Length: 298
Image 1 (cartoon, helix red, strand yellow):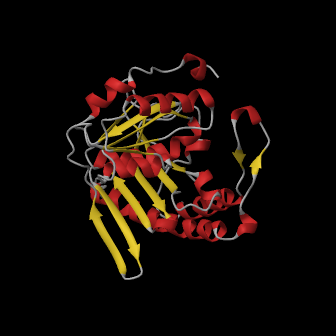
Image 2: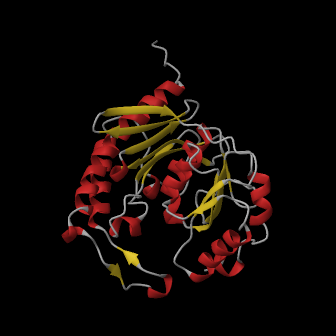
């Protein structure tokens, strides 16, 4: 009887590289659409009380392309958004994200991404991302990470491709640090982010607000930021969070909810990521602005 070879971290890394190649193809189509004014969507008036909504045809193109091509690469049990109500330990589901940073995309900024994450259900029947890929087409950057195999940043330029191991900063204090934060367009959620940023004034050298979440997490992983926080990331942000999370984990950074608990992959989350050295100082500020029940109950 033929023995089945155990999967190694390198096997997962190779799989991540293959899927990254597909994501780069999808990203080129999305970049083409961004540069073509006819293809940029306008805000929808649906649910106006929840802020502007964008319906992008390119999202459908990405989903169709990735769904059709990824099945040729490796066995998996389905896609995250159509998985059954109950999953068994060991089952794996790909989560292909829509454009992360849709407002940046529509406004023709460069900071937007396409993402992919592979979830695996563990012995406790809880899902956990084990591969994360974040591709920023307009920046020529791809971050990818696989469980046990570390994280890498690939920068494609006109003179070739450069690959670097992703490692976080060594900044050990909030004083003089550089932080990133995110906020939504909903008043209660955005005010919480601004309150935290205001309370930090005078300690960090700078506090950046660029987005999207997937790219911000990768910027913590590679030392661009010393930490990043966002008060209300919704279930539709999970693809971007998951992809960036694996990059942070494999770079040996930290990531959790504001209260220190683990991320819930089926619910809304407040998220904080750091280089692991300033998280206690930062959480002191975050915990002054706890989870808002009024937001959580919407």
